[in-house]
Length: 206
Image (cartoon, rainbow, N blue to C red; front, side, top):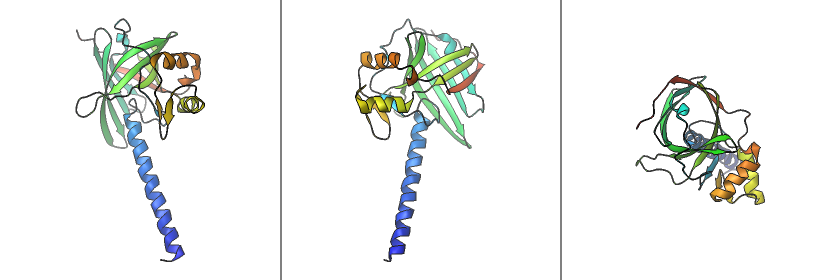
């Protein structure tokens, strides 16, 4: 085989690998707390807090739609703060439906959700995905993803236990994880995020 042909084959192989990697990242992004956002590349083996039935917010219930109508969140739940969200992603004509179970946490007056994806066998994922949320008003919800760069640096410098390959996986316990988030306001930065508008209100189930 000539050098030129080998180079062409090498370039073609790199393109195939790149396309496959992009497809994997896209698919993972679809599974990451409901949004196709490149910043959402952080998972955790532990939540920010243990489940507390006193920490509930029925204002989060309802059908929420983002501005360009590519993502719809259908959030319902029972009393005592057990929630489930069905996410309908409609990107370029491709529709994906995802489910998460979650409960809420509050650290220093800021609101968070600890989510586990519901898999095809109806079992919950073994890892958590964490988001922060803010109400702009009762009909406007802002979802804030973790800053991958902040958690990546913390893992690499020993500020928090975990590992980083393609994604950041936090392995530190609840106490250290929540302390890290409290002490690093930029771990869930208010800048950016995704705004959703309430289309339908939903009452909690008994």
